[in-house]
Image (cartoon, rainbow, N blue to C red; front, side, top):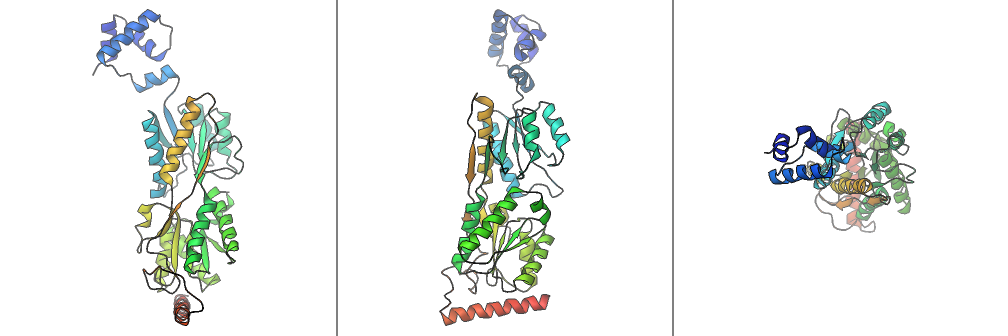
Length: 373
């Protein structure tokens, strides 16, 4: 592999002159520049990435700003990253993950002041997110994967939570469910203004009202233990519940375990639908989870493409796009009172046999609840 010294020898210039041609740090005559570039072409010399960055005044590095706690990245979050990384690589950029905490604004200012990043992708967006102002003040181009409350002048790509929740509720109501419990993120996460938690909460209330069904919403810590605790609260408030809609991927396995611990089966006694979930996570459960599948990879790709337009075009338009999740029916949802795996039709209240089956299952649920209480 050719080196800078080889280029200098062939072009009959100093190594420092080759460096200046690459970085633009000092003015070099056009004739000398042409000699150096001809030598580079003859030797098939590939400049160091840092030298190319200095020459273009760019690092060709994009930052994915994602606060990460002790739980690390799950499969669904990883899909955002891999989609973004693939799009960045295809355009000749590198994507680096920066786990700066959402509250560490001083750390974010230090990162921005180092001028290492050509642009930033912001994740885990809150409705009122101070990180946006910090990056704007530092002159760092950014695109949100998520949305603030006021999106004026901001490029973003986000999940269409309203449509996603409506589709999930319609699936369960269409199967015959009327007692549906919605398990959200933790109360602290909701209080912090985390966009997905607030938007899905409001969408669930609206969707249930459209179907004339009372909404029941319960927060849960993002853990299996949190899911079990939320399920216990759900049965306290609605002993006759027939379905759980979970917007908390880490809690959903605790919900499944809690149902099994009460002697209840999925979906015979209680249907479970997981929101904004990757197929990999959905297939880990037994039975496999019916889920609103996250468009995570597409979100990451579209966000990078929008960011690159801001970097490479003088007047790139603001990009604002919503993508819905896709309903994938698996083994965890079915009509109330139907055998496992039978997901055809809905329970007809006028059918004595169907109504009897429903009554028997409801009685079995209540008995199980009393046994475990």
